[in-house]
Length: 97
Image (cartoon, rainbow, N blue to C red; front, side):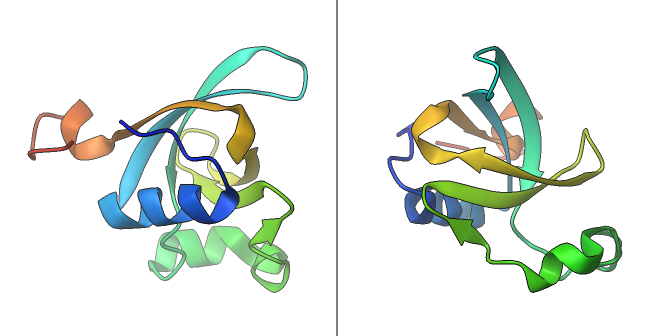
């Protein structure tokens, strides 16, 4: 799948597919993955976002997402994203891209 080049690209890609797995390089230089969403309107995610809902969604090239596997909001640098895969493709319950 096309890798996001800006935080806005990353937001649009995740938003288009609902949830996605993202392979990225963290601040320590290690390759990591996260299962994320940018849909903060679901009650579970909304409750977990807490005070983060008042922060900017985008800071430079970093996008705030909700990480299902970490069970909290995290920021991911769009320039460090190596791969984005729609969760529906991972779960084989949709066409994916």
